Amino acid sequence: MSEKTRRIALLGLLTALCFGLSYIELMLPALPVGVPGIKAGLANICVVAALYLLGPWEAAAVNLARIVLNWLLFGSFTGLLYSLAGGAVSFAVMLLLKKSGAFSPVGVSAAGGAAHNVGQIAVAALLTGTPSIMLYLPALLIFGTAAGAVNGLIFAALQKRISPQRKG
Image (cartoon, rainbow, N blue to C red; front, side, top):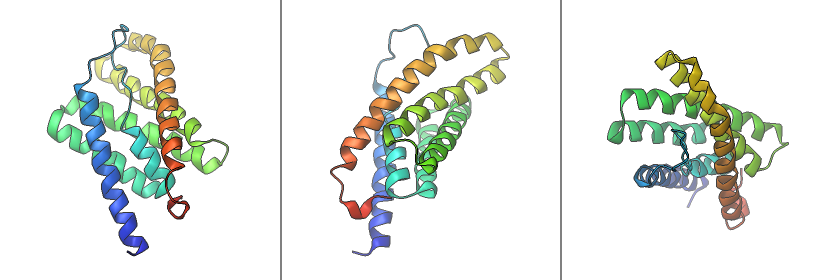
């Protein structure tokens, strides 16, 4: 099998897995912590995997495909705006940190989890016209960073089992 065929197959696999993890997360009950929007961000494992195993363009494609598929099948236009903002800010931060070479996949993913919440809360403040919604940000940053770190640890454990020829 050619390298191009492997990359395309991996891209398709990560996209499907990303969408599947997003769907599973939709089925999970919300955490009873009093702060809306707290999620595990499981699909981010696939975005981080694509970033490290394939490259930035492919990771962006996986991220965008997840957002659009979820919106088309389960979401609303407002949900799309939240997802696009969170996904874009998160991806930009993860890309910059990965390119810096100063962070492990765990650090990149943790920062991505926090950044996702920053993007979403900014859109929420704009759409609602309620700046006080920013009061949720500290809790969202804590949970987003923790979830991102756990997702990064999951990817790091998986990365050890993937052949060296596929590392990016």
